[in-house]
Image (cartoon, rainbow, N blue to C red; front, side):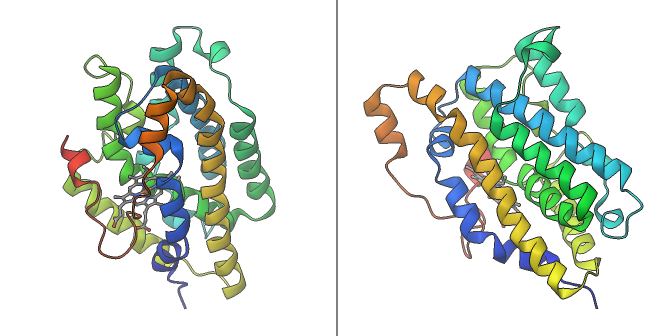
Length: 249
Ligand code: HEM
């Protein structure tokens, strides 16, 4: 019997998602406070993370646990390379270096690919469904805050193959169905949900490492003001349209 992973992943990471939205970095982000240095550092980290995830998924594309969620059209590494060239210049490959959190995250992905490839499902879910959801609002925030030139600096958040909000919703449904079609033994299903929580933690580590750079760019009063309020989580029941204002912004 299929393992019904989509609903279990959503439910099983709801608390982690709420926490992710309430880090100082994300709270400032949502208030429109984005600084170039920490933002480009985040993209540099994502480059090693997606680089590892996508290289391993390419290699494992025939694996029964990976094949159903292998969608090359959502891969991010080429878009990240474009953004890094924009932020760091032509020699971005030497300039853009990951932080320890980025390296640890990439290392975890490579390790899983060798030992338990099914657990990569958790990582693909956490990043790609996130990018296709909240990521769309975050794109608009970044563009406005950094006053980016047309067509540059946010290709990470842009999906040429899935351009509209409707297409993204349809794709996410397709992705959830694909997740639901996967059959794994129950103990592995439980581990996949646990690993998704690890994925959220690894993401949190990335933004926590950048908090210092953000704090340095703000006055202590502004930082305290922007980070004071807890927001309810976007994947909690009844709160699904929380991003609507940002998406339209
Ligand atoms: C300020 C930060 C964030 C905001 C505002 C946000 C917002 C949202 C929204 C509005 C949804 C759609 C909920 C729905 O379809 O019902 C969503 C889904 C999701 N987000 Fe986030 N998000 C944020 C951060 C993150 C982070 C850091 C991650 C993980 C790295 C993440 C991963 C996900 C995932 C995996 C889903 C899909 C949930 C599911 O339907 O199974 N989000 N997010």
